[in-house]
Amino acid sequence: MKLSFPSRPCITPEEVSAALDAAVGQVKRNLPQFTYSCQNHSSVNGFYAPCENNQWTCGFWPGEIWLSYEYTGDPVLKYAALILVESFLHRIENRIEVDHHDMGFLYTPSCVAAYKLTGSRDARKAAVLAADRLLGRFQPKGRFLQAWGGMGAKENYRFIIDSLLNVPLLYWASEETGNGRYREIAREHTETCLKYCIRPDNSTCHTFFMNPETGGPDHGATCQGYRDDSAWARGQAWGVYGTALSYRYNRRREYHDMFRRVTQFYLSRLPQDLVPYWDLTFTSGGAEPRDSSSASIAACGFLEMAGHAEREEAEDLRTLAKQIMKSLFDRYRVKDPEKSNGLVLHGTYSKKSPYNTCTPEGVDECVSWGDYFYMEALTRLHKDWDPYW
Ligand code: GLY
Image (cartoon, rainbow, N blue to C red; front, top):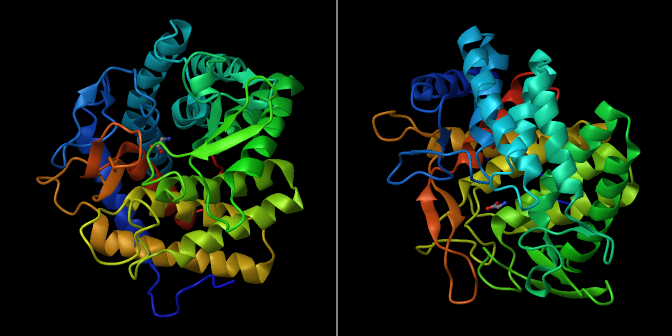
């Protein structure tokens, strides 16, 4: 499979350091606004507003602070991120907006990171409680973690490909507590999710419904993609990173094959600068917005799999990640803090199409996870990183 684009330049080690210096500078500038508040999921005209700790995206900003702390060792960053950990403990103990599966997105970059880096007991407690909450989303009939809505509701009897980034919290909880149940459910869900979300042409569907009576497969559908039968760019990117992480935790050869398949499709739909349009239906020109966050997520997936692949494939994957990061560094990152308090421009959270069911928001803006995964990919290029996931 074609794993690199020979005409595209790679980001250099000096540029990686420059990008991290600039990102950390922006994170520090943002601390006064976002230590006792969280950061909204997406910017408006380039600027994030503060929000309560009640969105699925609130874990990414503390994740950026932890990555900044790893890069600099600055105790101010640790102090601020630990204040946010208390807010995450409060949230899970009081069950504030936790009736969904996004416990991993919330608690991995905020609290698992905090525990790994500082040994914070509150962080550990919060993350284990979040893992328990995620276990409660398991549907034995169909063997999957239900993404959204009331448990068992027919209109919500489904999982989504994004969930592959939520299950590492379960592997961590198993390791940490010695209770194998978390791992068992993680494995069952992963198997179901990958079996049905990857289509025969190697594209992915965003969400997949199961039959609540029989537990058998029902149908794929989109929420944030262009159409039910298209490939939402971020869903495909979650698939790239998610299959790499699934391989990390299970070492199953078929997960490596699935990684190659979803990667192949993703790469085949990229425009010249390697940053996808928001849905992979769109491949060149036109007025459709990009989703730069998908590029960073995919780069993280390539770097994760590079750590497990044989030499030649690993080198190709690293090259690919460096090419993507070069494009983000040159053309997408925020260069002037007067114009944005984010890190990466041109992300798309949810774009309405005539065929999808999403609420439009964050179109052609900075998005919180886009900033986080941009920093994660840079960190992975900068050093041998111990993942939070
Ligand atoms: N997990 C939701 C999203 O990627 O927008």
